[in-house]
Length: 612
Image 1: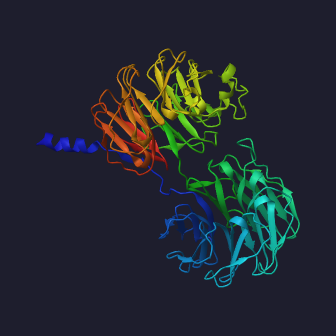
Image 2: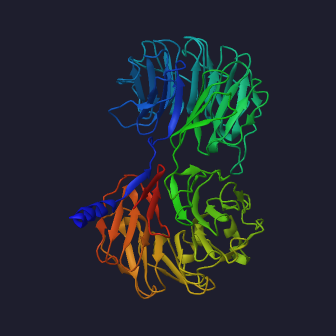
Image 3: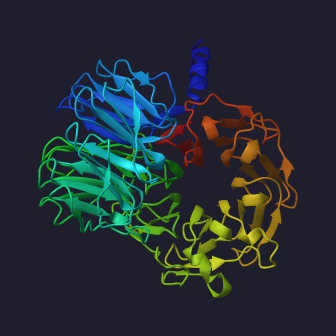
């Protein structure tokens, strides 16, 4: 009886469980507080979040439609408006418990909204569109302006006086409620994405190329130096700006950049370190000390000390790869420079500062302290202290000139030094390979001290110019890479020579258990297997058409594959039969890994981490 009681319990433990998954899965585009307690956030997937306790808790307000929402404004805790794609205007008179869709007479995307009281409001958007209402949004009328440039921002300070900003540095002003609009010289040709007027004299507009322009008389605009970083070689676009008074202002920008001024914009400075690396799209200041910022990857940031420090209220990581060095130490990496770390076997995951703001796709460790991460923009970052600090080995501005001393692509392959990497595999603690864009393969045989380019296609079959998404080495000599157009290449001599072939759809991952036996997973439910070292590949029958992103085998019989929509497949006979597993998530799963003790982990979108 005791045995009978134990067996079902043991079987019950054989299930996938969620360790981490973000509550909010959206891009947040705007935040607005009507007072210190009542605030709203809007974004993609018809998302409206509300707080009635100063941001301690946020709750979603349901909408019976699917639309991307761009801007939100309230005039008191009960009455507010939201605008978005397809000419959408929503109004609430009960604090957002219910939202009413208003007829705007347009399907044009609305990007900005400004109300000065419960009756007078304006919205603007694509194609030089400005519409206005005099009855609280019940009816809307188009206003005539002499431009087709997108109007990205609009701000009225009274029923008569307002400004609008948009494409090509467009700045417009009206003193009669928008019956007539006149151009003002903005002092920039960059698109202006947002405008904020403190009163009828002082205002600021921000936009592409780090543009910040300001006025102190409501008429003449001058350029202010934003001092945004150049993370990708160009000044970051600035997406929103707001001031608490005539001196203190905060602007939200790309790649997690937060700009602050304490002298009205005479000097701006980016705040370091960046709390996140995601695009920041909306900012609202409650006072010189308290502000909220929202953005991509469900980002919500809050400061109560004027921006010196920021609490990360919400942030998702779009995870792409996971690695366990042993049963306790593990790392996961993803988009927007995401890097998470566990030291308790995955029970808890904490962020580490990767120092990178782009996409990270592969991670591996030489020992407990020394590790490497690869990603887009030729990224190769290194830690020598277990992830406490990371630094770049590559040169993002290299442009194929070989300026990164520890990375060498010689001869006709030198241009590949500027390409990104999509995956990495350690065959031994000292031998690793990273693969990526346009056939990029680089190899280290000294634990990461030096990396040398390899050519998988010297005979020019075409495989060498395809993107490579998967790599797996079983030792210091034997490994496979896979990628676009069914690219498969194997080496038996540490990459000195490769045997490439083209077979089937895009292939995303490969896993081998010995020199003869391997599996490949790819698009449209593709799984192929070889038992003769890759001479022939046999399609396996799979009960899904979902794109598969990762495959892993424990031995010749037991294996898993994961993919889009939370798909998890399992086989106990080497793939002769694959069965759908009950998945704890509907988020895309991107990578699989096995710990030394045999525990299986998968990671994916929205900080999804699951284990078996």
